[in-house]
Length: 499
Image: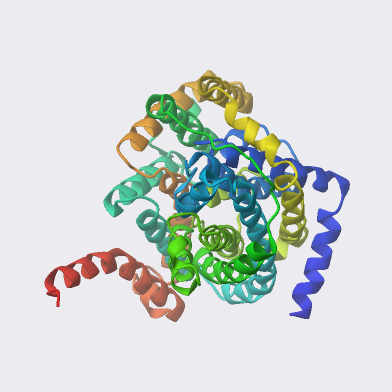
């Protein structure tokens, strides 16, 4: 533990430089803005900014991306409360009670408890991240090629099974990403693979082009096609924004309980923010002294889930930084950002780039303070963003995405790929195929292939090496459990008669 605080102090020395403070402020501001704007999430924003940040300092760029991630968690509550339009599934619960509070003229206290709860949860979760990361890294340093391959198989199964409504669609998206990752020259044999005789494909398909195409172009086309004409009613931000003493008394325990739900679920590979937010809401409804207010605008129903949402987003950085495993679409985009700078998150990154990793963690503490200042006094400014016409917003995103992709290599081929992938992303979104597994498969697929080959070379071709090592055997067993567990659970429930 003392060693962790020593590293954290070094991280603050990095994060408190004026350049990184500016990147953190920019990320938090952009994150709040995209959280407020309906349909524009952090994954889309990071995808848009990947081409523009390719030549920047890696530490500053990643600090900005992290600020966008948890800033969007803050800003998302504004849309849920005032418009009753959750920007993502994790904000559904906030909309249930928050919008009811806004209709009763209590939008200010609802926004305040969401912002303060996010600050409390984010700070506690970042402290836990600082404490959990070193032992996780120590454990991961024991991994060999067999363990790393098994870990990536677990990442494939959990991300594909959790992100999306259908496991079959999730795995279809994963295999599409694995196929895209194979395009180019094989790193071991130096043979061309799936290039179709096109010289531009010899270096493979750029992950930035795929990310921008799927998340920015595809998502924007879908929103423009299906949500541009939706009628929305913006609730007025009237009355005081400050919470009363009774509001404070009813909020502080849900903040802590929400954090306790959110961080563990965000930290596990099969986590996510949806489950802890619903668990927090159910818990607060059960423990509340005013259960009759639930469904009518109970402040506990905003405080707990918002804390759980923010703690979960911070918790997702634990597997991402220590093991290189993304547990959400935005975490997958941050993984792509690491890849853009030639970095691979994991235990080796803590040894090779400690200033970057601990500077990133320290920036989370600073960003939480910035976000509290940005969200409470300036909430009226953020509300005005909701007046931006949707056609202008979507057109701006598409123009920025096109310019960014072309700026990578000034290649017409990249532009063609961008729009073909964008149309594919639109169809995936239309037919409910999750896009995050494509990015995960594309990035981790070649790494998993290399570890698989190395493990077989060391074991002289013996495939049981993945089961003879205890850690890899456990990880493989977990992957199998993720694959067949939901199916078995459905069978058991179907065969068990109701009593």
